[in-house]
Image (cartoon, rainbow, N blue to C red; front, side, top):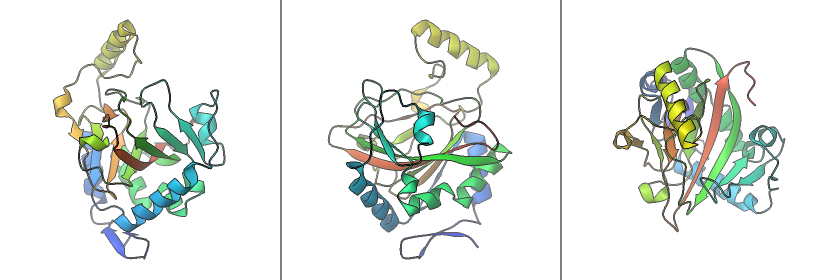
Length: 251
């Protein structure tokens, strides 16, 4: 029987029993939350190792794009400036420096949930760590792509309320009709916004993922989602693995 273990090797969660149920929820809602995925002690260990490396890691240049950074072959930090999520640190390839993150990228349980929900084989693309410290302006509800992409987020710090910037998702928004997608693209074109920005949704329907460290959130990135703006002085760290269809050009 497969289990996730903490730093001392103690079982934190029985995986085999509930993977199918989690996959069903993900397929129906576009998002699923798995409590107690990682032990708090392991989250603390990962967070401390990331924090000790942050100041020494190379910084991305103005011409570095997502594809070049994710295939760089070493950890690298992109600080978002002059855009939504201003001040957020997006750390690429941290799994190359922290073995526990490398294990998360290869996690069989998460892959099983994604594959079962999608009805196809998806593979892990890249792993990033997001460090938000008082990020007060974030992008509104949006989809990443309609071409097939999932992300698995693991909170490495407690996110007990909205001041910390929890992930939000509008359940059921991951399967928009062709008409709705085209209408949204037209409205966004008129507004001058990206084509996948949310248009036809009610923010009151959003699932606000306030949760303790160690919580796993798996989301279909075709659904409308966002990070909540933080209040000054509040922090959040999470690790996220992207999953794309096997054999696809990820970049």
